[in-house]
Length: 186
Length: 139
Image (cartoon, rainbow over all chains, first blue to last red; front, side, top):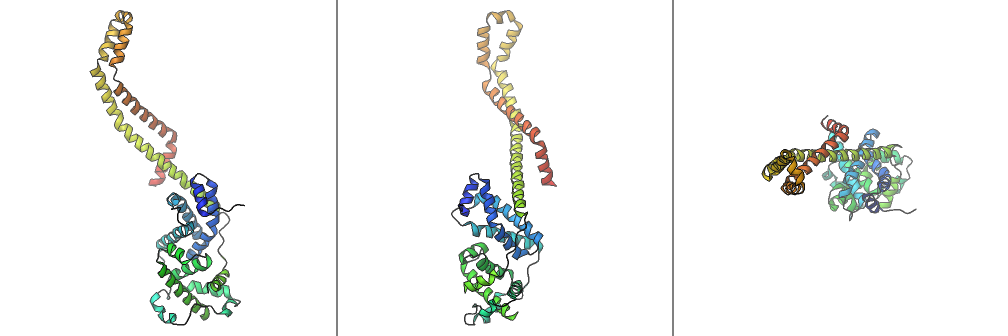
C-alpha cells in the first residue's frame, strides 16, 4: 500500500479528498493524544483537548504553509492548546527544580548526561522513570518527550516550543541532568 | 547517549486513545463545518437584506421619476381614452410607448426586486437553520 507524506495528504484534502484528512488524523491521533496525556493526565480532559486540537488543525489547514513540515506545526498547535487549557485551569505545575539557574553545580560534573548501564537494567524502571518524570517540570518533561519519545530533532523542538535552538539545547541538557539525578536518587 | 535515553523512554507505554475518539473528532469537524457554512449563509443573508433594504426604495423612486419624465403615461392614457384611434394606429402607438419606456429604471428596479425576493426565499427556506444558529450564538 502506498504511503503518502503528510504534505501530500494535506494537498489531497485541500483538493477535496475528505479521506486524506481522515488518514492524517489517524496518523497523528496516537502521538497527539500521548502528548496531551503528558500534559493533562486526566483521560476525559485529554480527550477534549485532543478533539479541540484536531478541530483547530482542520480550521487552519488552509493557512498551513506547505513548504514547511506538518509534524512540528501540529505539535505547536497541540502545545498551545495545552497551554490554553493550563491557563484556564490556573494550576501551573509546581516543581522545586523549575529554576534553571540552580543547576550550575550539576553542570560542572564531567559528562553528567550519560546514563549508568545498571539503571536500564533495573526491574522497577517504569515506575522509577514515571516518578522521576513527574518530578520534572513540564518544560523539561516536554523537551525530553519530544526528543526521545516523538523523535524530534532540536530544530523541530525549537519550532514546537517557540524557543531558540540554543535555549532548547540547553534546556535539554538541564533536563537530562535533572532526570539522571532523580533516577539515581529514587 | 541519545540511544540510551530512547531505550529508556521505550519503557514508558504511550497513552492509548480511547476507541471512539477518532469518530468523535470527525463528528466535531463535521459540526464545525456545518457551523461555518451556516455562518457564511447568515452573513450572505444579512448582506443581501441590507442591500435590498437600501436598493429597493431607491430603485423604485428612480423608476417613478423616469416614468413621470418619459411621457409614457400620456401615450397610455391617450390609448385608453381614444381606443378607436389606438386600434387604427396601434403600430405607431406601440413604437412610441416602447421608445418612451424607462429602461434603466425598470432594469434597476427589477434587479433589486429580484434580490429582495431571493433574500426572502433564502430566509423562508433556511429560517430554522439561521434562527437556530442565532439562538446558539447569543445563548
